[in-house]
Structures are given as C-alpha cells and as structure tokens.
Length: 393
Image (cartoon, rainbow, N blue to C red; front, side):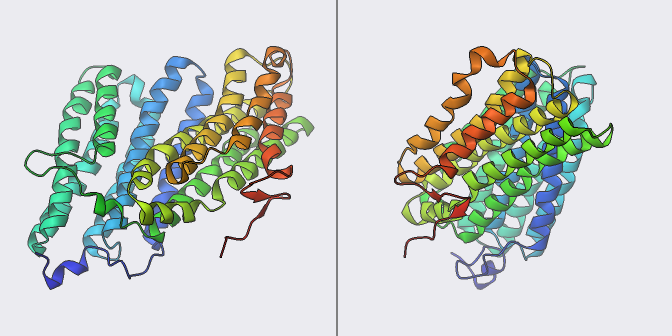
C-alpha cells in the first residue's frame, strides 16, 4: 500500500512535466562524453576501434537513459532523486575522463564509474522507498538493482586484467540491454509491470528531445575545435558549413513531432516507450560517427577518400535516419519509405566516391538528407523549406 508520504518521491502524473535545471546540467555533462567519443573515433577509424567505442558509448548512453527514466518515474525535485542526478554526473565525468585511457590500463575507473552509478542509484531508491513503505516502487528499484548487480560481475571481472576483456564487457552490456528490453525479470518479483511503462508523460519526451538536440551540436563542435588548432582556409570553412548543414538536416529529421510520438507511445502502450532507448542509441551512434567524420574532413578536405573514411561519411547520417525510422515504426508501425529511399543516393555513387575529395562525398550525403525535407511529396511529415507541419487538431 502507498502511504501519504510516498507521493513526495514518486512523480505525480498531474505534476509539472518540465525538465529541471539540474536535469539540463546532467545532459550537458553527458554530451561532453559523446564529443570525446567522437574525437577518439576520428583518431582510430577501424572496425575494432569502432566496436570498442560503440560498447563504451552504449554504456554512457545506458547510464543517461536509465537515469532519465528514473526522473520520469520519480520526482526530480526531491532530494534523493537530486542526489542520484549528481551521482550520475560524477560518474559520467569519470567515464568520459577514462575513455582515452581504457586501453592503456585505466579500465577500472571506467567500470567503477559505470557500475557505481547504477548500483548506488538503486540502493538509494530502495532505501528511500522502504522508508516510505512504497512497495510497488521499491520492487521496481529492486529489479533494477538485481540485474545491475548481475552485470557488474562481468564488468568488474573484465577490468581486472592489464587490458580490458572486451568479451566479458560485451556480455555485461548485453545483460544490461536485454534485461531492460525484457522488463527486468527478477526472481520472486517478476517483471516490471507494463502499466509503469504506460504512464509516460511529456517530461520523458522533452528529455529525449533535449538530449538529442544537445548531442547534435557535437557535429559542429568537434570539427570547430579541430580547426581552431590550425588555420582556417576556404576549404576548411566549406567543411564547417557542410557540417552545419548536416547538423540542421538531422535536427529537422529528428525533432518534428518526436515528443508527440513519445507521449503517444505512453498513451497507446508500453512497447514504443520500452524501445525508445534502443532506437535513440542508434541515432546517437549516427551522431558520433558524423561528428568524427567532419573532424577528419576539416583536417583534409581534398584528395582521395580512403575506404574507412568513405564508410564513416555514409554510415553516420544513415544510422541516424535508420534510428529515427525505427522510432517512428515503434509507435505507428508506419515505414517512412521516402526517408529510406533518399539514403540510397550516397550508395549510388559509392563505386566512384573513393576517388573524390572527402568534402564532395559529405556534400552528396547532405544532399540525400535534404531530399526528403526540401522536395515535395505525399504523406510527408515535414513541409518544404525546413518548416514544421502543424499538428493535426
């Protein structure tokens, strides 16, 4: 049973849905980690390096996602939740600082930050909810604690050697993701009830939008920092303008009705709400790849395009679009074919693009992104000229 004091921790559905200033500060800290991930990727463009960074990016994103879910279910104005946000910020700073050093023997800092953030958060929640005698919410936090404890065994074991055991870390992050997708099935407690996912408010939609928009800023931030360390000529300026255009196009692709889709997900069922962290992870991977792409392009916009660069230039925006398409399908089961079709444009020139300058290849990718926004078509979500269509009454 829920006592009167329980409402001080569990969010009221009729309460404010605006993000708090502490939540916004929390977002900025995590976006800094994403920018560093992009920079590291541009320094080691390889399949092995990309897989390792993807694993660490997933850990960073999962920390943000679970914490955002926490502030959706619990009231972020209350002291225990604010303490959890501050803890997550400290953990994210430590994870970000350790990213460049993970492969040279400092993996324990990364693991301790990730595991500590999740386990301590759950302990704070279980303790506070036990004192408030809120059984349902305490059981929810206990489920999370159980599975993060299970995965922590693999995280910590994989960090005990001189170099990271990427196989064990792969198992650990898989446990975290699969447990989340399966609603944290726990002995004697079962799964998180679907009704708890169905109570999504505008707050969560706003949180996702704010984070993605801040993350998109890395597409122009990372190459700008690269240019600031050298000289700015016409080609580098053109590369920055191309990065800015791609950033705006990806913003337009994502932001239109994204919050409405998440609210609709909460009102129509729990499936889309549960899938939102995974679809947004795909989009974030696209942002990181795109930012890394322009970090490379501003350093050498001319000459031929190496195959690893070519793959990265095309893959980044494509991943973002695919993630956005999956997000739409999770809510409406509608496949926006036009969005997918325009992404085929860079693939059509792929056989010849290796001999072209990187800036030209990136411009063709930008043209593909602009296609479904600027060219009229039927049953569209956006209108020509980067204008948003008014929501249906």
